[in-house]
Length: 326
Image (cartoon, rainbow, N blue to C red):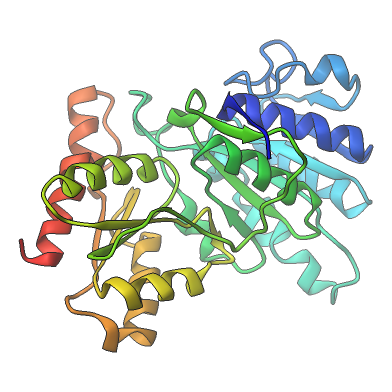
């Protein structure tokens, strides 16, 4: 494939333009979509190219998600822009009690081909109500699929797959990664849900991560490599479905595991991964599975305090050394 260097923002906009051209039932609904091309510029050019299919709404997440759900039930394929992942809280009934359950409750007679697109994560000094990582809530809700990409090529391949899904997908995109650049193939491609990726091969320890923490984990791994520690980095890309086969193959090779995510440590998705590894791969472990996550406090506004709360490269380095007893 021929690659170009693109940002995550550009990769998302290109993918959506291609999909909207391919399928006239796809539309985007949310706040501030046309005046500013989305809050992060992620929909640049779409309202000009697809008039009437980029729909600005009042400031009501309840109404936005409800309208998207109704459209999905009648055969459309909406992408619901939630502006910030933190605003899930105002539409939890529509998401957790309606969107996630209707196909099941109707015995499979209806489809819910809807993507809820949600910028998440901290690092922008946006304070406690605009900096959360909430993926654990929705992994715990049966009926939803959860996507958490890191690099631009994965953003494009996964959003194209997500909008073609007949089940609801929550697509988390970290706010700090919109400007992140990387190679993106020119040719058409899709990345299946439930397929992780080994971003760095290694033999001493498996580092399981996703979203922004993928980059911090790779940076930590490079530094550890200079000390003779060979780290394998797995980017999960989707949490539900989960590519546990990829995890298992790596754990059987390295026999050591560190899990890293930005969400709060307590109740975070890392606990689920650790439990599953303990249940199915215990005999392959040389040390207990260890987790790194944010401290269990609301995210502070102060950059210094925010950095203290969120995992940093040195936290990952120290975590690896702890597991390996170095």
